[in-house]
Amino acid sequence: MKVKGTAHRVGDHIDTDAIIPARFLVTTDPEELGANCMEGHEEGWGKRLKKNDVIVAGENFGCGSSREHAPISILGAGVPVVVAKSFARIFYRNGFNMGLVLLEVGEEIDKIGDTHEIEVDVVVGEIRNLTTDETIKCAPVPPFMQEILNAGGLVSYAKKKLS
Image (cartoon, rainbow, N blue to C red; front, side, top):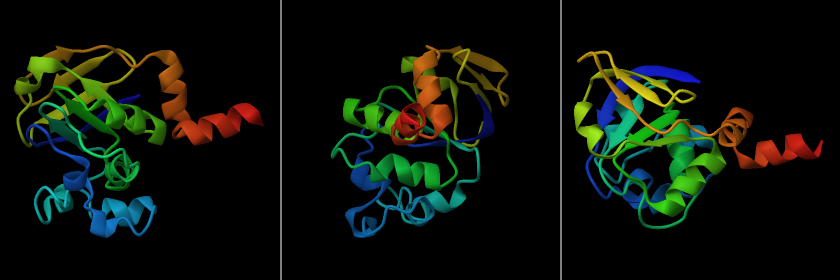
């Protein structure tokens, strides 16, 4: 899986309330949640996201509650990948369960600036910054996790395996 899009930077410790505030949790519809993605971070921030853009975060992205609405809202906003210095563990698992690709790159995150054009290769574990012509290596998503992602998340994967 390769994704090419614009990087949108956020800082450290972005919690699930910033990703999708509680007032929007009256639905599980990805498009409705996506329309309000990052509203708790900055009003209207999510409106800048376009299909295949990438959220680039600092440390501990997705901390806070274990709500699945957070990764669903990111996917609903058209963002298939989040690249971060690090992720909160519950969010990390929920992200993959919902079909959201999450890549940890540590300190290398500083090589990606806001609005840089990047290309993410999930299979190889490589992020090419097309703006600066730099490449960041990271752990590729393991094949069994790629199967879950390709199925659209854990529930879809399980249904496919059971049928």
